[in-house]
Length: 105
Image (cartoon, rainbow, N blue to C red; front, side):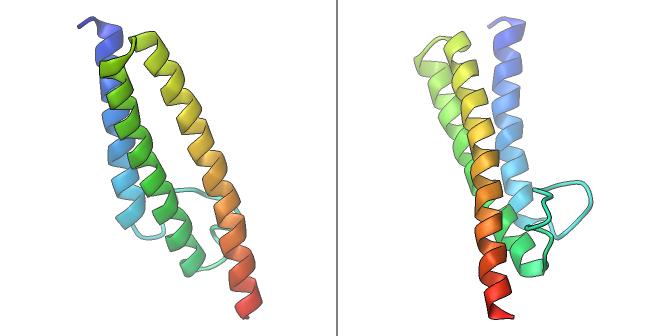
């Protein structure tokens, strides 16, 4: 295993770690998705970041599987595409959660 492949495996593992942290860490200024929608109240924060955490865990696991099944160059592309998609999807989800919370109040 060369340095690049080791870096990829560490990146995938760190993604899973951040996914777990996003799911369980309370509202803070450092970790988690920080949009106006997710910061509307504590409920939107928890739901948005739990969703992001689940997506990041899935991204990390899929990336590790692709690393061992296809070439490391291709697994890097898969990782980056999934990572960007997970953040975009979580931003859309935070907007959806915020809209539902605003309807309640």
